[in-house]
Image 1: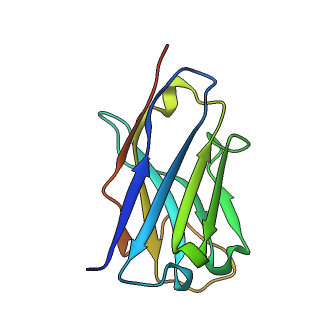
Image 2: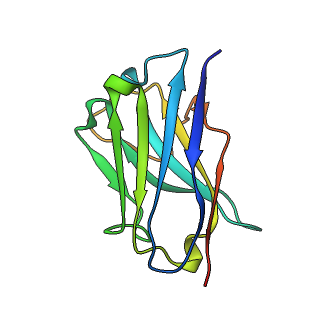
Length: 125
C-alpha cells in the first residue's frame, strides 16, 4: 500500500518545540518533492513548507519562516518538520505530502499525490 505514515505532534507551551515525522511506505520518497501543510479549526488548509527532490530548494510561508525547518532523509524514506518557537496560532492538524514533480523550485500549490493521516499540534499555555 502506498502511503505516508505520520508520527509526532502533541501539546506544547508557547515557545516550545516539536518535530513531526512522516515515513513513506510502498514508494521511494526520494523520487518526490515533499511538503507540509496544516489546517486549523474552521480554516482552510494552508501550506507550511516544501522541498524539492534531492533537497536542493526549500520554501517556507512567511508565518513559519525562521521557526520551522523541513528536511528529509531519503535513506530512511522519511521526511520531517522541526518546529520551534511555537505560537498558539500554530495550533492545527499538520499533514505531510509528496508530489511527483521534478523542478528546480517547489511549490505548495502543486497537486500532491500522497498525504499523511494528519497529526494534531496544540500550542497553549
